Every structure is written in C-alpha cells, then in structure tokens.
Image 1 (tube, rainbow, N blue to C red):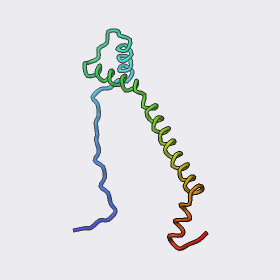
Image 2: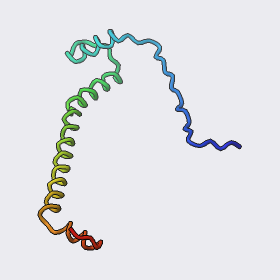
Image 3: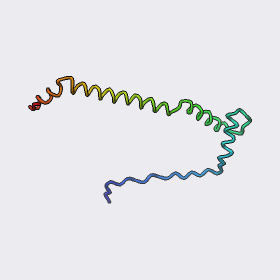
Image 4: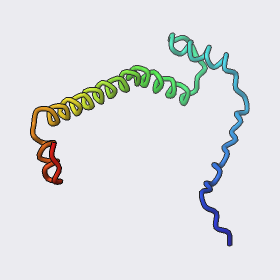
Length: 103
C-alpha cells in the first residue's frame, strides 16, 4: 500500500464531438428567428434562443457592478469607523492600560 501526500487526482476528460456543426448556418437561423422570418429551428433551439435573450436582458454586468459598489460602501464605512475609534475615543488607551502599557 502506497501513501502519497500532496497529490490530487487528475480530472476526468469529457470528449464530446458533435456529428455536424456549421456555425455560419446556425447564426443565420438565429438571425432569422429573431427577425420573425420562417426559421427551421427545432423547439429546443427556440427555447435556448428565448432563454439567452432573457439572460441578456438581466445584464449580469450591472449585477456585478452593484455588488462592487456595495462592497466599496461597506469597506469605506469600516475604515471610517476604525478611524473614529482610534483617534476620537479612548479605546486604544484603555486597551494598552489593560496590558499594563502606557503611551
């Protein structure tokens, strides 16, 4: 029995090869479907097209920006509270005196 430390297993591979794919034709069919022209999309492809349109409407870029702004506000308020506690209260003096140190 071998003991191997610090070794992770290799991920299993997924080899999917489509039988036939023509990206130009797929894009043309999608454009026709968006314009409402007669398209040869299957029901599954139409569902995918509608789902991708809905997801684009939600605009994940704005979703990320909202949380970046929120985190900036939270971090900023923590810094301001820290500055207030250090410079405008006797917290540091009380902490040092608790350990027997003086300024």
